[in-house]
Image 1 (cartoon, rainbow, N blue to C red):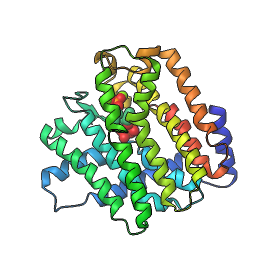
Image 2: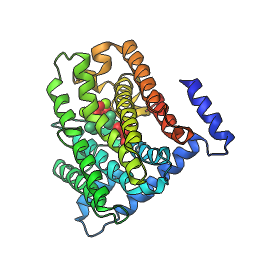
Image 3: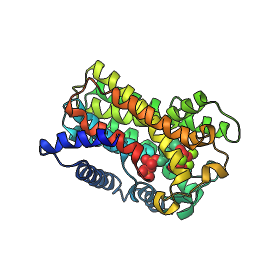
Image 4: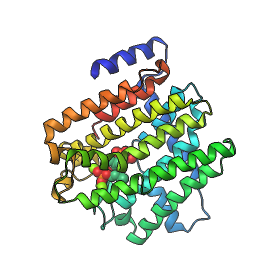
Length: 310
Ligand code: IPE
Ligand code: IPE
Ligand code: MG
Ligand code: MG
Ligand code: MG
């Protein structure tokens, strides 16, 4: 894995591209500015917009926007076309985190090293901030004049299915249903593919679609890539819950075990979970075989997803 990262890096450096770390930082800054501008809406009730800003702007790796930008590049497009989709998926993600942390869900008090939204504000405000962010994501996509009507509908459908019962919300329901019960690995990977994989897949697909030049074949490969990368991402999230200190992850260490969550380490053990992580990451990389160096940012991101410390 380290060797793969090195080879991709060397190829990019030879073509005088920014290093992965530089690119990561640039795109994160770009995303932060866009999100900030979109939330700079003083017409909304003050407490509501404050909670939305708190949940969106206070850190986060911005992996979903990064995937959207990298997917746009992978199909040879201009990554700027992915600006709105990138923000839309991040709004859905931020909403999912606010609701995931609620007392009736994971009951978490710490997120990104700060009090969770319902602790900082109150539960009702947190619920509403999540609701508003979700609606905002769809409003944004629906009102972007740069996309044709047909493309807008395609993107809206993609994001809606990834967010709702066929995607993130469905996965969260399975997560709650599985808590405290034994779960087979097939059930676990299915749950993860919905609760986390679906939005990660939508991020990649929307990024590629936004360029208006993704072929059906490319979209199929990108979807396959993202499904594997999304699963790998959640396996690593499960592993980090065991291994990463609260200071590093910004989330309470060991929370999954205390809550009897069904996770890769709880079902397979830590060593086996790590093996699965590497196998799934290799499948993600293989899904990009038909792409040339244009997909290197996506390849690097997939490696980062599984090696990230938090
Ligand atoms: C955490 O996602 C929630 C999961 C889907 C596992 P991230 O690790 O992407 O969270 P931030 O946005 O970087 O804080
Ligand atoms: C959350 O999964 C997935 C979402 C849809 C937000 P987790 O419950 O494992 O995420 P963290 O660990 O709290 O970030
Ligand atoms: Mg959860
Ligand atoms: Mg959680
Ligand atoms: Mg987790």
